[in-house]
Image 1 (cartoon, helix red, strand yellow):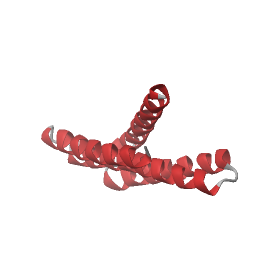
Image 2 (cartoon, helix red, strand yellow):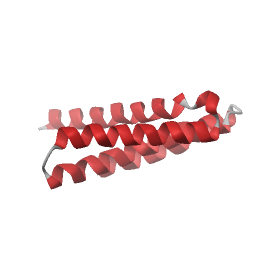
Image 3 (tube, rainbow, N blue to C red):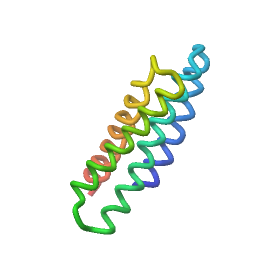
Length: 108
């Protein structure tokens, strides 16, 4: 499932960028795409954390905090007025990952 999430997030990041580019907002599109892509990476990192065992909750909070900071920094560097869009992208990708996980659980 983490690879599927990362792949879907990669496609969604590209679509988001192209959509906002079409509306004349390339910086916001890139920021949103970065946030979505970071969310896809989070799924891969979460799977790795789970395999390692240990303090999964703490590491999850630290991981999402670091990814949120990266999304925000990318947004500030690209266009400070739309920096929040990267966090929205990250949140949207987490929703997607949760939906895919719920679908997988319901299949069983």
